[in-house]
Image (cartoon, rainbow, N blue to C red; front, side):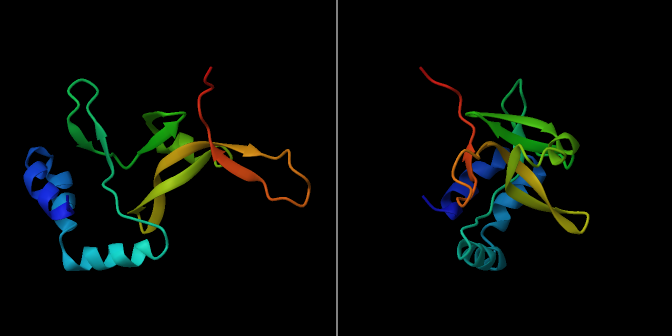
Length: 130
């Protein structure tokens, strides 16, 4: 499976903005950006959400952030998430209003119980399992 084969066959049912994003992945300049991003452990993603009733793909609104908490994804007002930097770790960014802004975050927990000379570890918050 390559982006070319998947994008051509599946993008047809997407809204225009997401269809355009799928097509852009094939552009040489986007492929070059992807290569350069991968040098830093980063990639490219398509900000999106789904209609709760139909499951249809929707563009992620500028004022909404995708939130992964435990093993569940939700969509919350970006302003509320932005004020909780001690609770959420940004994992995806978009360019809006002349600057990068988080568009997806993971809820995290900090382990501050280690010795004073150890760095605080940050982990993804998982639900407790029996």
